[in-house]
Amino acid sequence: MKDPSALIGSWRMEAWTRTSVETGETTDALGPYPIGYIAYHRDGRMMATVFRRDRHPPKAEGWTVPEKAQLFDDMLAYVASYTLEDDRVLHDVDGSWNPNWQGLLTRPFTLDGDRLTISGAPGIDPATGEEVIYRMEFIKVSDSPNM
Image (cartoon, rainbow, N blue to C red; front, side, top):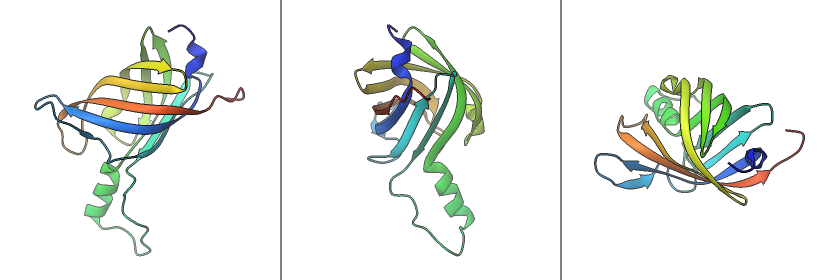
């Protein structure tokens, strides 16, 4: 990577797709137009949070067990330290909504101006258990020097 500081800042998710390794079918990972951000800080820390746009509406009386399971499947969240190696960012996950994501996650990425694409990231879809390849597209919203 020519300028590692170009990754510093907050990035809003534009799209997130998953391609099934078995079938080759590509679908939206959390539905169309997910709500999410990934942020990289100068201190080597990062965080990511993504939500399905059409999650259950607010509910005063609490959630049933199946509804709670659906809410879990309709999001992603983790915090990590990160390092860069060539065209990959390595996330060393401290904590995650999905305990299977603890440890090192390798994410191939490209930067093109204010666009960040993390593509070719293998994984197991937590909702289906299927082996998939993820592609996430972000647009930069902040690169504050105070980060």
